[in-house]
Amino acid sequence: MFESISEDLKKVVLTGIGAVAVTYEKGKEVIEQLVKKGEITVEQGKALSEELKHHMKDAVKEAELKSKKPIDVSTLSQEELTELKRQIEKVEKEHEADGE
Image 1: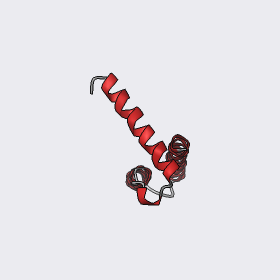
Image 2: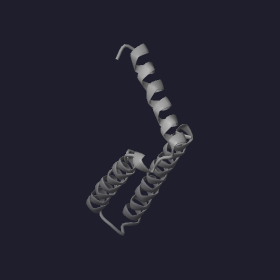
Image 3: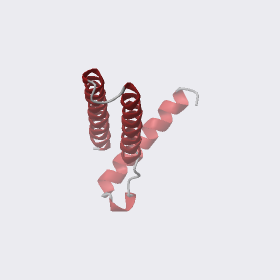
Image 4: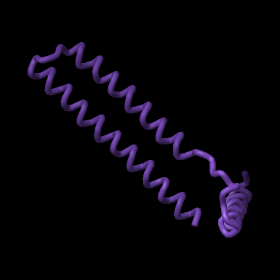
């Protein structure tokens, strides 16, 4: 169950990051077109690009933080707790095997 949740969460985060990347690229294209048309100056275009980049980085960080939100174990069923323990043991064994 947790593997499924973990994989689903990864997919959601990656989808969000992909959407941010596409938005950034499209925004950059629009800025370049405005500069070419003379509707904004090159300096204004650079400033807008930097602002866009800053907002995109913030959006990615926010998505990453949301994906790392802790699980409230007090709400888990016995079956879910057993699965969580199994997952923890699996990760611990993998780390031991890697020499960590």
